[in-house]
Image 1 (tube, rainbow, N blue to C red):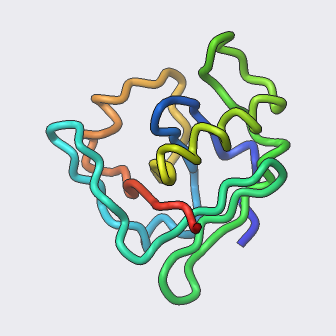
Image 2: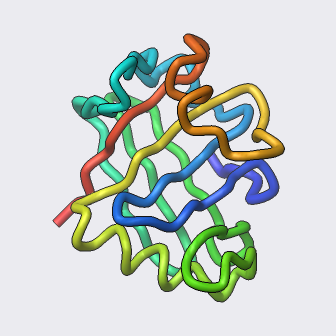
Length: 131
């Protein structure tokens, strides 16, 4: 499934995050339970972070493709949201060994990690990158 880049947000960091709004794989991802802030591993899922496309592949027929170059990226030194930061997001994912993928109904206006991780409605977790 092709994901509309307007319904995604790539967040830079030591462990990068990909937020998905209205994703077709929402129900296939595990319900996120991270009361202590430790994000669990998504068993059977993998991510391929690339500059132009980001592929999230799950078990069976579940998966999606994000046209990454057109998607917003936030975080980093300048805190900007330019698509040129996608290379940096991909570079963050390499040493992290993957990314945290969170699926929700709609993208939040502000990033409140404690609220997201304890909402009880978010699905996802850490997804390892394919080697």
